[in-house]
Length: 469
Image (spheres, helix red, strand yellow):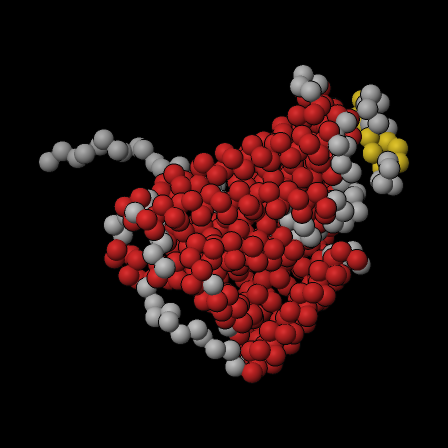
């Protein structure tokens, strides 16, 4: 009997593990130091006190050759340089794992959802606004995985579909993530790398977040109304068996016990202290790591968890977020190689020559596009910032783009792509949890993505024209 060889030799392409991608980038960066001439710009103190490149002062310098030892040592050196961020990210994962175990997060979202269940489609903004703000201040976009199981049953009960429930969580958190106000792992890292005052420029980002989130809310409300009026308009119409898996008895709101109420007040105080510390005291990962640890331990003890249970929860949280933390160190190694090989200024000069062909007012939109493309292979925002911002900051200096605008270009280009790139881990996990096919989601979200990126481009052009700094 003959064998069907029609599909033999055809293998489905699978994107390599992020570690593999980053190690390849480290090796490519090293090879570039052997080929690309070493160069240097003169620098001067800018308006913010940071050293900025002086346009037109680039010159080739004596070639710097790195040995194999520098290549090998760049990885631990990158981890050392990013150690504060590494441990801060780990502690975020640990704290949220404890909070999830206490049931406080689920209770809060459930209470909010049921409070507005009788207000029709207005429940959508009432849920999305707090979700977006939590992400905008903390950067904890992974909380979408906590929101979805609570919101979907409610949306089904009210006559909407699973896409509506999933989109409430994803659109709001991604809007807050892309236009983060004080998120240390995105805007914090980016601003630190280009030597801006931490969380500066928050006023323009608040306006931008309000615009982007409003567009997302209106987009989703229109879809939700259409589905409720005619269920056949749902992109997943007919998935009754799947819907049945999410249907729950939600007539009774889960009641918090006294311990959970006290723990919730402690968490609320901790969040307020965090926001004040971020804005007024310039807190970064070291301070936040300590606060997150304290919040996790205190809330666990108050609810009645044993010390061993709290320790196990922290450990589980560490494991869940270890990939994201390790990516930061590996990504930093790329910057270590480019800096030690003295070719960052050469790359910046080359990019500057390319961007001379377009008006400087739209240079930020090119930066945004580059960041969006880069996120496909580096889905970690903090890792992407480690690699790209030293280059983008220098490019901003020589093209007349303010460094604040270059950070916003990073945020928008990277942030929006997390809602449709298949390389985004928590996004794909959310679709798997909601049991929504990727192709169906893509059909739903594509019009919003186009709108968001166009609006993002306009915001960047406006920011550049007003010399936002």
